[in-house]
Length: 593
Image (cartoon, rainbow, N blue to C red; front, side, top):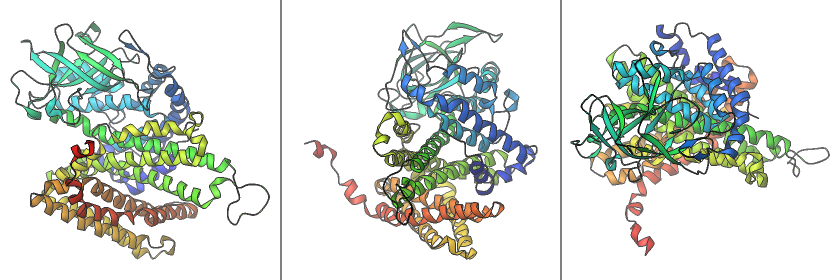
């Protein structure tokens, strides 16, 4: 069973990540607490009562492929149509095209609950939402008029077609072709792999966004253009016409998210699929990054959603399963394993990591919202930089934690966790892909170090670290004994982050790029753990609006994370600055000799 943690979500949105700031803005003047509560409550109900019960069914059934068609799991299509009837697909979309225009923060919160219900279900609409954003920002008015309303409503779904057999993370190797046809359209040919919901039976039409090269395009990523390629042509009156020259050639058999069809798509078997240019020629990657940045936050939320589901299941099992006698317990019989110190430690680790993931994702969503609402160029740049800085953290830390929490959940179940019957193993299988797609977490680390640290000449990260220090100062100044050493541990982590950030900047300035890249992954985790510890402490500091039990609980969570995870930051800092020599001296070919 899954129960949406509405109170935890609402508290994090308002008291930790800044929803109240948005509520005060004229653009969201009618977004009162009652409306927020109603949206979260209904999203949670839908996730728990309608999505979650089909999660195991979809995992067992998969997405059978036959004669070019994909069958989604039993009840999947009906579930999706109930979902779009609720208006969930257009939660944060532009009202001009039928959306509700609500903050990205609320969309993120709802997306968490849907992913807890079923990651395999939620990923399909996630890509549609990303396609909507890309079209809204870059498409012509004619394309917007023809496609956006039905994508916003969810009547049609969208996809993202980047990867090819020879071109994964490195899009320089992309070979799909686009040839101008002389009438404003292009003929698209090539093969794309790993296309999520590339073919299915849930909607009448599927709108593919496809990266391809023009005949005279420059080499590398500067020569990539983005095209809209519908499965079915759309007539001027909005009705569907003939089938376009695009087909599904197969569906992958994956470790997890079995309910999500992952397709190989073939464009142009019969002369070329007809596509329409989005944005400018040879500027497609910039357009696609609009969708990819949206997707990276959404994938981070996948890690969060699965972590919450795995934690809830592990807690329920630990309270029910009796083994041995816990220290200090009296009475007859065995103790619930939840009372054994090692299980307590594991449950606290699962819960604190889940809450860290939630806070980082919501903080990133808040920055995106603020970048949209900022009224001055200076503020827009600040919040755009903040969203840019937080995006790799919001993608990598929650997905890493999702795998860790799901693995701990299997461990708490013991031998039964390794048996598919309990469902604990599915959470681990499902979560594993989130650290890989939409830019592996290694790529997120490279993005953070090479592109985000230099923002505003390196001053933005400095200001960010100063903000973290202010909250640590509050913890110390609160003089609350229940915090234990939390304040000191936060300061130590922040100082290490500041020291290693300075080292990273110097390495890049001195041309020691390889050294910086060798330390990128531990640097991202160092930054993520430090930010996570600060956000948990902020929640404990702001918990005065709740009852005494809630204040005690949030303080315990912040303290436990500080005492069990922040010591790791010192080792991570040493890893960043000291390990490049051994890493760069490796000869991979020698390993195979």
